Length: 93
Image 1 (cartoon, rainbow, N blue to C red):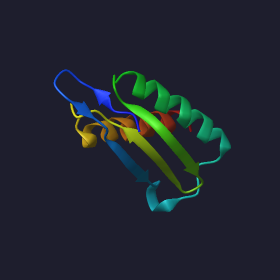
Image 2 (image 1 turned 135 degrees about the vertical axis):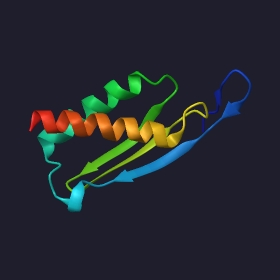
Image 3 (image 1 turned 30 degrees about the horizontal axis):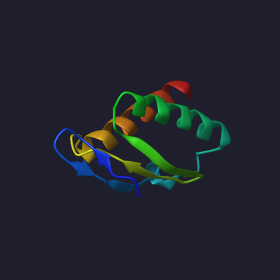
Image 4 (image 1 turned 180 degrees about the vertical axis):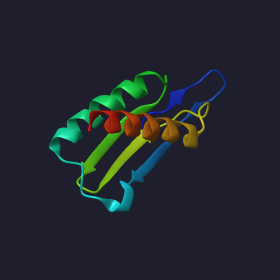
């Protein structure tokens, strides 16, 4: 396990995040999977220190393990990821 350094400390915070589409609809087909991966990388690039170490997109849910530094609230990071992907998917469909 790698420990990350910040200005005044060291951390190794991994979060296991799972979320589902509304009503657990089976809408995450291969085309949407590729688009979501590109969106995740674009969103994470805007938050220095955040990394997606592992992800899995199945037809009815998304599961990922992320490293989020202590300077970000976990709820704010998840809110940003879910909000941006939701808006972009609605525009695309």
